[in-house]
Length: 322
Image (cartoon, rainbow, N blue to C red; front, side, top):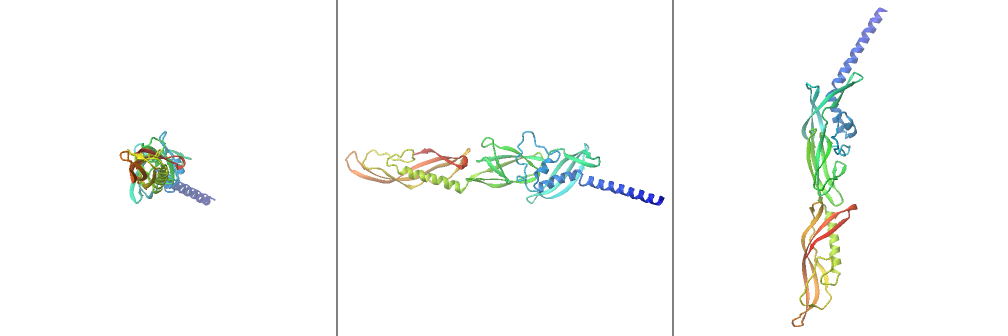
C-alpha cells in the first residue's frame, strides 16, 4: 500500500512538472510577445483582416478612414522570420520580424506589452503602439481608384489627397480602371506602423474614351454640314463674303480636327485643334456682276471640355470656335 502511494505521488509530481513545463513552453512561444505578433502577421498573410483588426491594440485614429482594413485590400507579405524579442525597462517588448515585400527584404519593430493573464496561467498581450499605418492617396484626374480588389471613391476636393489606414506591413497595389479611364498599377510598400506613405494614382483616358468623344464630335460636324447657310447655327465653322451669295451654300467635312484628351481640373479637355470644312457656293461680284463658284476648304479651330457624368454619360462643351 505504501509503495503504491509513493508511486502515485511520484506520478502526480511528474504530471505537475510536465504541466508547468508545457505551460512555460506555451508562454515562451504561442503565448509570448513574439507569438502574439506572429499571429497578427499570419492573419495578414492569410488576408484575414477581421482577425488582424480584432487583436488587442490594433486601433485606428479617431475619424480615420478604415475602408482599406479589409480582406480585399490587404497587401502581400512573405518569408516572415523572427529576429528578436527584447523586454524593455517599462515591460514593453520590442519584437522585430524580417520579411519580404515583392522580393525585397524589409524589417519592422513592433511594440507589445503584457496584459492580464488568462486564467492566471497563459500570458496575454496587446500592441503598445498600433500596427496600423497611413497612406495619403492623391487620385489625380478621377476620384475613383482601387486598392487590391477594393474599389474606393474619394470624397475630398478634386486634386487633394485623402488619408486611409492600412495594416503594416504589406505591399499594397493601387490602380484605377473604369469605362473611360485607367491608371497603371502602383506597388506601394508599407513597413512601419504609424508611418504616412504618399500615393498618386493618375488616371488617363483609354482608347474607348478617345473613340467615343471622336464619334460624338464627328456626328456633330456632319449635322452642322447639313445646314444650308454660310454660318451654321452653334457650329464651329462659317464663311463671310463681301460679295452677294446667289446660291444655297453646301457644306461637307474635309478633315475633322484630331482628338486628344488631357486632364483639366476634374474634367477633361480636347485641346485646340484645326479641321477643315468644304464649302461650295456661287458668289456674284458687286463690282461687275460676274458670278464665280467658291469651292474650297474652310479651316476652323476648336477645343472642348468633356465631363464624365452619371452612368458614364459624356457631356461635351465647346470652348471656342473660329
